[in-house]
Image (cartoon, rainbow, N blue to C red; front, side):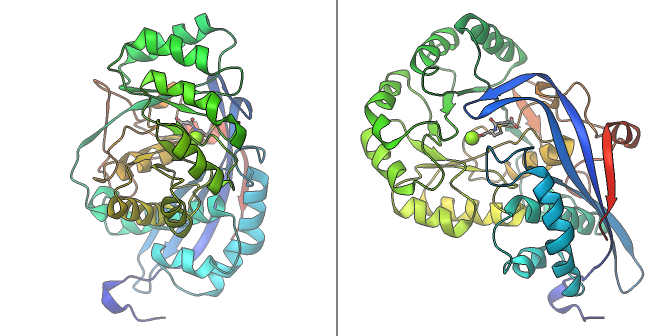
Length: 383
Ligand code: SMG
Ligand code: MG
């Protein structure tokens, strides 16, 4: 067994179980790339053992969607790459802790969502063994974070306004509206009119526009938006930089940012005036912290994005978003925004527009086993 220098504790990956769960949404969620009515989510449960006989287990959540519409990854592909490529490589490297997961998998290209879910499970397990909270691990001091809500594209402006009013009544402190060509300026004007000048408001295009849409998108400058999220295709960094020069509203990247190195380049090129940090999209929470630190050093405001996570990812995101660089409200809404029933014992909720930062050992959740079992559609012993 490897000795543990610098107080690092090394764990042997004993078992890895992959679970697929079906989570129906309380209402369809439409974006420029499609409409979701249910999430098909891949969870990772790992069991670790230490040389001194301690054992621990932890959970990770993979944020990949059912099809490669948001990003190249999709849930069946994530499961396949974990079983056939990532886990064999992880195990072959011998004992590990969470910080070893990304370097050990670095020679395998891409798949940040699959890699991030594995690192997350190891991190959760390791923190539980230490009886340590993620909040303590990250050194966060904030006890609550402001809660923003993401609003889908609606068929009519009236229906949209009714939905937004409901979220205002729930207490959300920031509205994000999904937009696409043909469903943008009129909707933004109507929502701004409804919510008044003081409610923070932003839009997300999920890559639906093109470089030639600068003059069109400049119309959004009239509505005092916090940001325009990912207007152009994910690889079009230069296009985003040009758009940032054409439009006064800050340009925020989401899909384009999959690593700290890429984020540094996008910032240097002037393409990323604000960063949406989604741990699942960037290969895990440790890379998310590196992006946070980079953005703080560069003076780039950040906020925590969401991927309709269950209580597992939602709890961990709520901790991450308590880091001081997260100066804008994140897409960390109450679990009930998407799900009638969550798979954790204390689903994330909001109170006066804020989410309490979880402080229990591990990433900040406990599994509600019976509910999880009834949501499970398949279980695979991957290791
Ligand atoms: O979890 O609150 C959430 C969802 C936030 O809009 C959200 N996510 O592009 O930012 C984004 C989308 C990606 C998922 S769309 C199915
Ligand atoms: Mg987005």
